Amino acid sequence: MPKDSREDGQVDLFLPQLTALPLRDQRETMERPFFSLSKRKRLKPIDYVSPDRKITVHVSANSEYGLATIYDLDILIYCASVLIEHKRRGTNDIPQTLHIVPYDMLRTLKRDIGGRAYDLLGNALDRLQSTTVKTNIRSGDAVETTFSWIDSHSQLKDRSGNVRGMRITLAKWFYDGVLMDGGVLAIDPAYFSLTGGRERWLYRVARKHAGGAGADGFAISMPTLFEKSGAEGDYRRFKFEMTKIVKENALPGYSLDLEIRHDAEPLLRMTRRDQEPEEAGKRCPSPAPPTKNKPPQEPVIAFPASGHISHSAFGAIARANLPSPQRDHGLVGDDFRAFLRQREIAFDAHNITQIFATFCAKQRPAQ
Image (cartoon, rainbow, N blue to C red):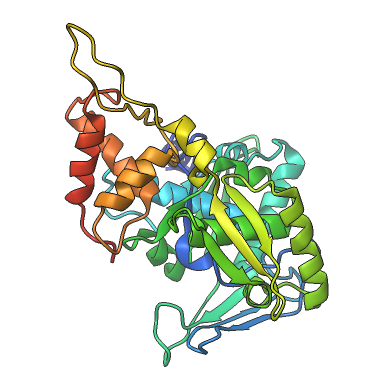
């Protein structure tokens, strides 16, 4: 078979219409410093040791390309979402090498479509492939794993030279981390509209720690937050920038508060916006009053067709009925929607809350 026609056929094997993927982020990368937070070329390595000295992360750059950035991470988030989509569709032997349509990826990542966009995508892939990570996360204190985010990447072109597809072979560490139980968290598509690297990083920290933390959210001291960021520059500058972000309070889905302490550095508290009392009343409608011919109904929860479910009623039922340790609520929501479709149960069934509570109670604990 001629090379060109073979490549055209391979492009046709790509998953179609993946511009509306439920977005997933790899959990272990969300609270440790793996990426440069600036678009400027960074050659200085990232060295991180957890406060208990059990977790280490060392990230080093190639002198030509620099460290992979928080913006390059968008590609990994898209790839993780494709892997989970394969899993949802029941694909046997989910591939470590993904066939990606660049147009779909750019649309999902809310990026411009055009010649320069493809060049920037190629530059990001070069940084992801050339950045070296060494960490003992997942492998234990005595074992360090060394890898690059992607093992290889290539472009598939049609006879006119236009890029129709890309092959991206993911690092096994990242691939295994996405597909393991509880390995990903659902994220808000609005994440890609955040322009600042520190805002993007802080959203991921909030999603990881405050996503299931309840009404009180999650609080962390500013110095500890600084160490987790891997940011260049000194602590004083970092504190100033974090204070500015807190004042703007514009992270999607999460509210930020700075708690000043007289005897220590301030705490940054992150709280899910749908945990706020005024929002909870709006999101969980009251039962309909009884009528002569119609018995009272339970509250109806409108489950969206895709994406992370953020309704406070949904979260309350999940927290009350899921066995501990609890799975990510976004993945539980996906499984519940599939359960309803399989049994042809309407999303607005009058006893949907009871069905969902029973469904949660039958789930296995997160591993």
